[in-house]
Length: 382
Image (cartoon, rainbow, N blue to C red; front, side):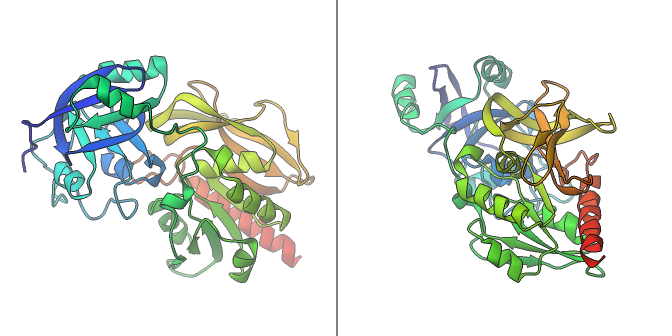
């Protein structure tokens, strides 16, 4: 199906910078935070990642849509981005698994897109000025009037969006093969590949709503607790931090990804802050400070943990330390909590080891979670 090229569209940033293009996907109007993603592939995973709730994603790769859309690669139940901005939408889909086009899916789900504008100039502007509020419209083509609407929108800082994306009811993902462990996975915007990765390792995963309590987790007989990725400002997610504090008090092994890393940092007593334009893409270099090994990682975050890079911090559970850093800007990319004997009580990473579209350098972290739960079980049975 060819993408329409006859309907004009307008994009306006909160600082007044405007770009004109053409509509694709749904017509109408949308608002959100403008961010850019540097991935050259994996757009289906990006668009169905709940972490992108209320964000308008700018694709830095100039040609998007050539692999179409399929029924296997969705990471959640819907497209979550508030809008999509691309330079050139492919008029032909050429992947053997594709059964419809990107344009069709966005139109079906009411997601407004804009194409045929200078995404390089837009990306450079966001990199220099920072992520900011934005509006896209096919109905209001006067830049000043659309800007007035943009300035009425709430900022991402202070936004608690967990309730928008979490599951309404618990979902059980059975272990593949012999069941070894039970994990309570708090859904803060979880991607489908996360419980799949754990299931492959003999873990029965209980994906739980964000309002889950420690009593609910205890009733499952969970061997460990996982906090997922998700959207919004970690400084606003007070209930999740309170639950994680209870989890650590109960001595349950913990593993967190992305938003889960930021909440782990808050539970350990660290602050969080908003990055100028964030890390989004599948080519972010991260160093493990223990091994000095460098991993190429997939990321999507606009907030980060404020923790000292080169010294441990005492907490009531043990010592917390930064375990991974981004080599581009020294942003904290991982945390680890150990007791007085050096036993790992919990750990987290800011990036996505479950990235279905790749890279897969960090898949070993799921094995590490298994090792931590195994060590905890052995300790309890000793």
